[in-house]
Length: 420
Image (tube, rainbow, N blue to C red; front, side):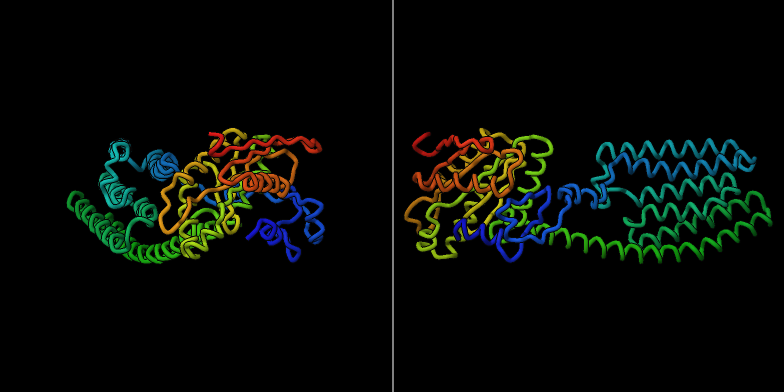
């Protein structure tokens, strides 16, 4: 498919692909095709994606969340102590337990020992430790059982996404058995009937509510898994929508949108931007020699070679047929030229297999963005340079130097086997 045909498909009369915005300012010629576009400035794609995507919590944030939950329990305990309901020794024991186990878990995470476990975040051991510490405090000071039930639910909720329902039920049962043991120890030591009745009331309430809470957590876990799978499927669909299914590189829709975004970024920041149009030479002859399946294999091999030789941050995608675009964000002309020449040389030197009677080569046109020009003008200059490479004998890189609008002088540089 020729470049003119591709341009007519992209900027066709039936429907404009992009509106007349500051992001993609259409030329007067393109406006003649469609005068129904609406104004307004559209934010760059990276900005809209970033605004929708929730930020992943860092390890520091996770530690702050855990410390905040522990801090609430400590604060409630200090409130009870201020009211004269909790002994000072109980407060010291609580603070000592917190300091000890915080250091233990910090050392485990710091040394990477948590990677040895199936559940890397160790939510189950953390919850077990929290429940055990609360039972110790309740044993030391029976009035602390007022805080036991609500903070048991807090601890269980903390590990709800990482603890299976079966383990959660087992944990709830173990918690109730530990609480029952504390009640038995209190009665054996004090033989206080009133305290026994009060603790039995707390026990019955917790024994009824805790299994129900675990059951509901299971429902939330199921919903969470469903949403997680749906999110991954959507992510895969989005990634597939950005890729050419045959070649694995970016597809036409994505590479054109990326060019639009980089053009806007260059206008806003003044950083350089370069674009290369890459076209396989004599591809019709390759299809005639190998058939369309063989031609597809040549395209796949070329795409692999090209992507192996671009730099991190460069954007390589298929524009149509055997024509590709290579975007160089924040790159001046010389580094872009060097990358293009490296790709050309690697394609020429590639050990092509099959029934090919001649080696595969590419013609590349590259230029630098002139601030203020449209995407179509930017692309057309690179495309013209690519056709100059073909007219000059193919298997070479043609560079068209950027010039100020209205300046008729154009400097063209040819790079190919003869100039090496």
